[in-house]
Amino acid sequence: MATAPDATSPLGIRPAPLHLVDPALASRVAAPAPDAIATADRATVTTTDPLSYLNVLRMPDAGTDLRTALLANRDALERLLSANVFTGGSAPRFAWYRMAVGGHEQTALIAEVAIEDYERGCIVRHEHTRTDVEEQLAALLDVVGANASPVALASAADDRLRALCHRATSGRPHMRFVSSDGVEHTLWTTEDPDMIAQVRAAAAALDRLYITDGHHRFAAGARVAAARRAAGADHDTPEQWLLAALFPADELRILPFHRAVARPRELSTSALLERLRAAAGTRPLPGPAAPDRAHHFTAYVDGHWFELSAGATGDGPLDTLDVVVLQQRVLAPVFGVTQPRLDPRLQYVAGGPADVAEHCRRERAVGFVVRPTTMEQLMAVADAGLAMPPKSTRFDPKLPSGLVLRLMR
Image (cartoon, rainbow, N blue to C red; front, top):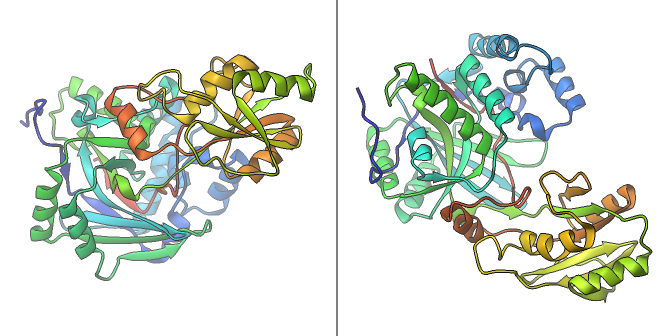
């Protein structure tokens, strides 16, 4: 029986028994996260295309018995397997997965990682998770018995891993296609024992991994792993590992989520601007502009643009984040938004200044354009064991589900 790693053990990163999607079907099978698609669009996709992996991921309606309803998801996966939509290899293997869009490119090593590394604090998070979502995803993982949504992880850049990646991706890919959002997806894989040994040796030098996307999925995997161990499973059974995509931190792109707050109807424009001036340095701008310095923000107020500036309230990893400075210096004192996770007046806007202005005009809101959080800031927060406010990061592009599949039975 395998034994649990101690606190000084190297990270568990190993080749996975991957099933790969048929390249001719990849664009139909690939699915974004269900919560990234409007409910009506999800229903359209799952109704019109039985090959979409959304059929395996969708959650049943509230009020139904969750585990019983998820048997339909398991059946959807069985239909994909029976139709040979996925093909397995003869041995565990590594894969490299590249996403390219708009001049940006990022390449991940696809592997399975030990959930115990998450439990012992070597795979770290920067967000809080919701218990109800964890429970739903744990049930999905347990009932379906498969993992096709790799958790995105970041690691410090490593020259050996980068050289191996370059070597692996110089050959002919297993698959390449462009999705409807313009992202080019390319996948390479290897079962070569020598290459696998070299990747494992290089990966052994990593001492920490950072969750960038998939906090709830990792927490759900940990729930399933703990439950199975409590039932007598050892530390090396399939559910003790999770499918992951390991990106070098310097290849990842973080875009901002801007803030918009419902406009106080009782305040005139001049009164609202006076409150903003009391909270932060304020100067008018001739038009929309993205902030280019730390702790500077662009505000949209009643059709006019302003630059705001404010100082941090401390020097801790969280205090220096622009979204935290905005929250502490402006959103709380001016608008009374003291609980950003719960306050319905606070909304988040993707895109640029034009998107913020459009949202504010439509929703009668005051908008704030922020700079993106950096990977260095994220890693500092995670290393300190802290959690960022909601919507502090927006990694782009995001991994789809259904291109690689790992069965857990």
